[in-house]
Length: 151
Length: 151
Image (cartoon, rainbow over all chains, first blue to last red; front, side, top):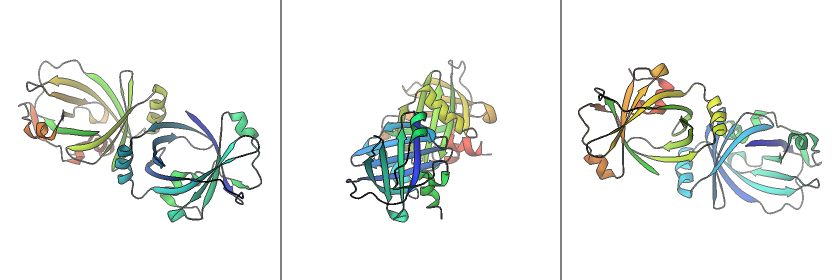
């Protein structure tokens, strides 16, 4: 239920990139509890996150396609479209590299999830990672959906 | 997934009233998709409703107690407390009579859910029901939580 995640800007793209999966997501709420629906292929998910920074509470449930659609249809202005490349790092962690489309086209972020606080503490970012933005709430996807890229 | 519900003011209270159940609920979002957590006894539920009026889309999932708590703690300003009396009507339907506490103390509403449009069309409210407010969005619980009772 606790999601431990560190988020970074991207200095340069690994080459070659593995095949991405296409992700569409929309926010019902971007408040202290963010409520998101996401479609990845034929999988539909509802996610509620509370808290901020590295460790957040995360509640996740599967949705039926028509449940996703009903919510998606109401969240017309808070949508994000991105391609996610899952990249295995040398230390065994997985980097989730997100390349944004739509109004955020050309923007990119990379996230890594951890099983424990110590693993998160000990993580050494590879050289292609840029500045860490984990505690900068402007780089959460809910904030990007609402306010766009922080320039 | 479609919730068919008609909502009424309450002209007078049936006597005697059956034992109520205590309901605490809080809204994460009161927008076009309302997102609510509810605690009834030891049961915790997440409900998302879209649409307005008599027929609304409803998505419901059980929550763990700690999941409920995490969301509840963020929704400090949009809470509703009420006692619900389930009253069997002569026609076989169940009237859910809600007596509100807290900032809505003394207010009351009654709702009836239906299995079909025709059952909802054909329903004859008992004499203790008051004016119907099904299509008056000010009387949804999400609106009551945000704006209070419409005076």
